[in-house]
Length: 163
Image 1 (tube, rainbow, N blue to C red):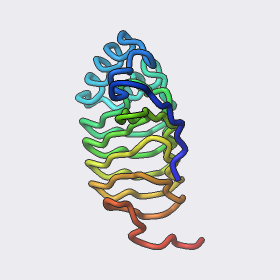
Image 2: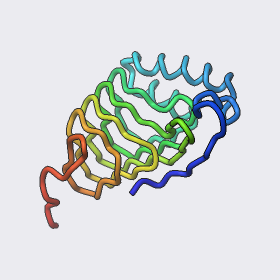
Image 3: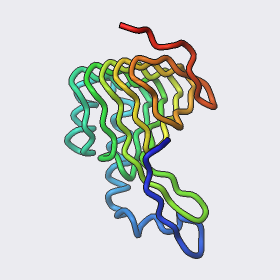
């Protein structure tokens, strides 16, 4: 179950209410720095941008593949542990703007996690330490530590190994 907070809106769809929830200047600034980080091949510089400019919590030796896209409006709601790999072109969202509501949720990714390329991680999920998420997956629910999951809808691909 995702841990999200729902905010109902009246009138037009919730995306038309976006600048009531986040400053347009924050959106523009974050977009520029996220685009720099997406194309930057220097991992320490990427992590510096994520930590210092965007306010994300990023562990030591975490690596973002090229083109990884973090939430533009709420990057500070994303935490990633040490020695984790975020695959090429992965998207990590901390918000959803729908027709009659928008939703916000923290995304917590543990240590030593492998996220395959082209994965989408939705708001409000926790991915436990040592988990592996197969390429092309949509993470719409929590992932247990040490598990191997994939697909859309997300399902366990291999049982956890007991220690």
